Picture 1 (cartoon, helix red, strand yellow):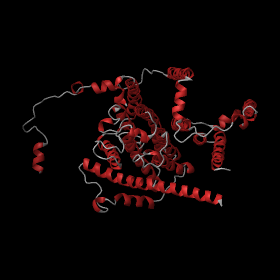
Picture 2 (cartoon, rainbow over the protein chains, first blue to last red; picture 1 turned 30 degrees about the horizontal axis):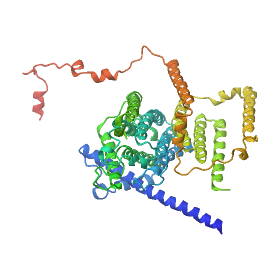
Picture 3 (tube, each protein chain N blue to C red; picture 1 turned 120 degrees about the vertical axis):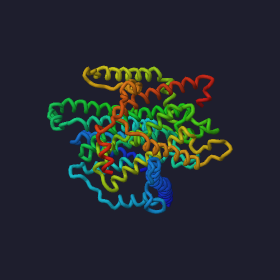
Length: 338
Length: 213
């Protein structure tokens, strides 16, 4: 009888975890769908166009129509492709993009797994996203796809270092790797947010985040004008859509992390208003808007300029600022850097 | 068998399988990907040992960076595995000797009565708020600071040496100086020539165009 009780408890735990995962992934996927809509609308307005406005009121059903269209399409596997890896590519792209969300806190209590090394976990999991791109590019057995994969591999390795160093600054300021603790270290209003003492790291992290997600102006892995569509040129239907889901989920993830680490997460900017998930959503939405704004504004970087920016500009900036933060923490002004 | 033991055997089986495939896979890219799987599974095993910092760092450093570069190189090179395997039987005795040595060393540690479960015992599980990272950092920067700094210096020397050995300055290569690019002024490159507009019957285009309209 006791073992039956144990089994029942285990089943309950598994079921409860599954429900929690669903409660996270379903809103995320809706967010992704409407981020594509927001992107088309925002860029449309910036370029004095209307954007999608035919399907549903103001085009609001456009993402649903796109999803249905992609689901109905056939997935074509090229004859010369490495079949198993070709299918594994999109899976490896989306899995880290979703797994990283396990430790993202929405408020101080609303978090799926409040683990001690949350920041490190996010960094490790997101660093695996590049395998989706590399494997897809290699398994397609196409020169364009392969070039895209190579570009992506070099770019992501370069920017991950700057990104990691930017995070080192954050954990020096907060003295914790736990994302909830990092946000709570910024309590006390707008002026306590880490964006002020760590402003250079904030800029580096945001730009490296754009580069890590392969977004314009760093989207050389896709590079429509040179290598057609880069790593996903051979993909069709839902396999192609999964790459897009991963890219947009990563965009939301980087925005959420920027919010948590530099913009005070769910904390209110002024002390007389209550904290709450509304602030989290507003700040993340603002950073997402920056992503769309970048895309509408900047032309694509040349490849050697991307490499120069990553290695010769960002890494020195982060290294110097880490030393500055470390030195300042030993002075009487240490409280400014927490 | 407890849940943890079941997970251990699951991970261990995957790790051994992936390790085997790294050496047996015919395609070098497949072999590299199996190595990625092996690293990832090993990280899972380390999590079971409550070494979460090391496990996450293993994924971050080896899976996220080192193996990406590895794959990058393996994909670019045209590796003929059959050619690589030509000397297989010649090297077999040496490889066998090294393998036997490794097995003996492992048996010495794992099988001896100085290191068994009875002697070492299972360490007490730490509470959930125990920070592995903090403990590791404290040890590295206090008790083992000299060894740690020494290792860091050796790595730095290796980096500098690797770059110094492979750096070739080509005289004929064209390169761009971004500082010079951003310093450039309009007057350096552009010359505006002011000239009178031409008039009269000799002026082409204008008159005939208006007639057509």
